[in-house]
Amino acid sequence: MTDALTIRPYRQADRAAVMRIAADTAAFGAPVEAYLDDRRLFCDAIYRFYVDYEPEHLWVAAAGDEVAGFLAGCTDTRRRDRCVAACIAPRIALNLLRRRYRVGRATVRHVCAEIAAALRGEFPPVDLAAYPAHLHINLAARWRGQGAGRRLMEAHLRQLRYLAIPGVHLRTTSLNTAAVALYTRLGFALLDARPTRLWAGVAEGHVENRSYGLRLG
Ligand SMILES: CC(C)(COP(=O)(O)OP(=O)(O)OC[C@H]1O[C@@H](n2cnc3c(N)ncnc32)[C@H](O)[C@@H]1OP(=O)(O)O)[C@@H](O)C(=O)NCCC(=O)NCCS
Image 1 (cartoon, rainbow, N blue to C red):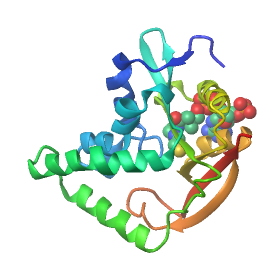
Image 2: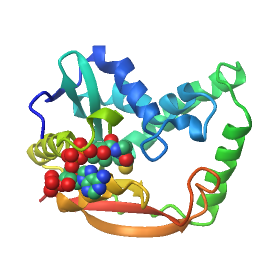
Image 3: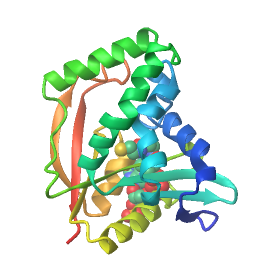
């Protein structure tokens, strides 16, 4: 563990760094350009919600002025889904119509692969009554393996317990080995695992989509 890192609540000034790390780590810890042409589309679709609509549950690992990584939490996944549908998706659609994102072959291939994987039932459903909260956690490559992931998780889990949230879940894949180790060490149970062809051409070998959950009561 390194003492050089501080775990603290997110500030608005962290926004660009959080978005950069989110995009730099989105393909099993590597940059999102492995499967999308324009990282702005990824950041808007996945992370705009946490930084702009629920920043009070965002945590940052900081080394001085440098953001080393973050944990983006959401206490009510159904509320997130409504907010994305009502506020975020329409803006993304408008940006697409105005050609504000680069959309090339990689993006088309990935969107088709997501739809096909969903139709094949490759994304495990989660019981949102038991596990209403969810989270994403990512560290810049040079700060991994030094205890920051565990410290971010512990800070957020304390916050969720204080808020009396009954349970938290997250989604990952069998290829995110450090993440799986971290969740398991913290007591998360594997809820479901489904083999997926979503990542064919992006990652080698057999891949499972997994959901993990932790009851907090
Ligand atoms: C996953 C991630 C957040 C973990 O954070 P971290 O700071 O690297 O992990 P820590 O150093 O806090 O280690 C946490 C635990 O996991 C274990 N662990 C960490 N890296 C590991 C690895 N590569 N292989 C196996 N176990 C590992 C540690 O032994 C530790 O257990 P302990 O505290 O009981 O000793 C970080 O590695 C990361 O951002 N990876 C790339 C992006 C990613 O996969 N995000 C998750 C998407 S679901």
